[in-house]
Amino acid sequence: MSPQESDIRNLIRNSPIGATVFVPETVEVLMANQAFLDFIGATSEEEFLNFNRQQTWISKTAYNEAKELITSGKPLQNFEAERLCMDGNIRWVLINSQSTEFEGRPAEIFWQIDITQRKKAESRVRENEARFRQILEASPIAIGITRETDQIIQYANSNYAELLGYDLKDLIGQKAVDVWADPKERQEVIELYQQQGFIEHRVVRGKHKSGRLLWLSLNWKSFVLNEEKCHLFWAYDITAQKDTERDLSVAKEQAEAATKAKSAFLASMSHEIRTPLNGVLGIAELLRLSDLDPNQTAKVETILSSGKDLLAIVNDVLDMSKIESGKFELETKAFSPTKLVNDVILPFESLAQKKSLELIIQNQIDPDLELDGDGNRIKQMLWNLLSNALKFTGTGKISVTSEFIKNADLPSALSLMEKDTILKLTVADTGKGIDPARLKAIFEPFSQEDNTITRKFGGTGLGLSIILNLTKLMGGDIEVKSQVDHGSTFSIYLPFDAPHAMREAPQDQAEAGYELSTKSCKVLVAEDNPVNAQITMAFLKKAGHEVQLVGNGRLAVEACQTDWADLILMDVHMPEMNGVEATQAIRKHISADIPIIGLTAEAFTDSHSEFKDAGMNEVLTKPFKPSQLFDAISRQISR
Image (cartoon, rainbow, N blue to C red):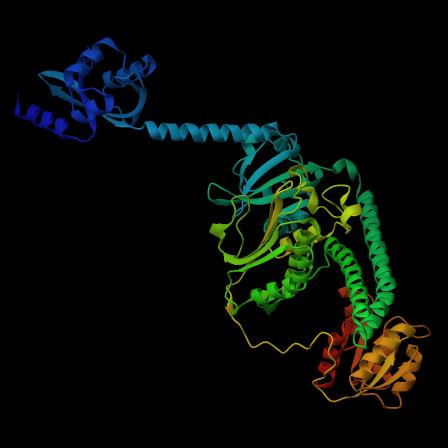
């Protein structure tokens, strides 16, 4: 044995990589190291050599391919083949060959690495991808997936390619906006792609490969695929519904007219309901402060409670209308999550006691921390969830949990959020539960868990729909778990900037109190409704103000000319001259400085903006609490 062969034997024998030496022409194995024997499952080299003489260790195709390469003088480089082991199992090996001389004959060293696990993983990936593609292809809808960062199409089905007139292979890798967006609407489409969450039924103009214009209804959902943010989108061709630009214009005008008609109806409804409701709640408030016996007090409290329930229904309808018309606006102010939860829960404690329900509060948030956002709307969501829990729970308990979590803690079914401080509010009950088939439907407007809900429990079916829409507007999401006869759990996830230490909070006035932070003043009240006038005057006089009442805007302008009043409370809807006209006349001809507070039953923000543009300093929506009225007066007198 030559020194060179001895070195080769030692190298092979001590290598941690499996290796065999064989003669190419006869396929006679001359040597196998221990690493290879361990891999093949042989107890000795002799056992393997005997086994190898009786078995074909790789497929005939792989053998012929390897032999052809070797006989042509080319080494095997990263050659993959299936290997038959001693126990009869098949494992994959990665082979690299090296020519040498061994025992005086030309030979090949096969360095072999076990890649079975890698091949299995690759097979699973291929199977999953094939299954994924089969699902896409089976869909009758045009579907595609784009990467969020650059809108490059990662996947698409044949229906999507057919819709746009392309071969499927030509779509993959292209930028979606370049493929189908009409140049005139390119920027609008880009802005749509930048939106997060769930977008549905967004009508845009697109183009066919031939240049023909299309009208598409787009829908998409943000999600994470292979650790990348992506958009799953699906489209419908609605070109047939829009044969000409004229048809589209007519449809748009009709839709706008319908929206305006609905808004006008809701504004009218709001005014017609809120005006008498203001009287009911105001008189009840005055009665509550009078000398009543316990029985009378209980009845007055019932009137107030029922009136507030009616007001909540009106607010829900108006909120839903604002959301649908895109006019809903969120406020951003500092609020304490701990105080928010405590404020909402307080009224429910006595209600839970009456039903013998255990009300559990689990606050895991530092009470000294604040967030910046719309705390009032979060209160509204939590209030609705608690109301439902109390309504549908006959026995057992209701629990409310508040905590901060991170994106990493979100349930896998939810998309990642833009901010990593996430307020999680959970309301769980042991009530009647929800049929799994109805879980999605409960978030639809005017929907109930079943057809008997309205008769048995009451309600408009708007609460959960508003919660879902508010959550989406805040960039968050909602999760519901329920089991019939075992209860439901609703969890709201809302993203925020990092919490900060609590700032000094202003002192709240008592809801039914009449103490003012300013001295008493002379108030001119312009109000044509006798009941509302009586209530407003009673509140003001009880607080020590001097009051003068007039019944319309023209009389308000005349009274203002005497320079008696320090402040004007101006109803908007009055005969002869309404509040807006009276305010404009006062500002133009009498005083630019006298504070004017508008009183209206209209709850739409755009209407309030019009009133302020006319010269009102601020606007109160009826029905209002005494504390809200006095806060407004304090702000205007002390400014």
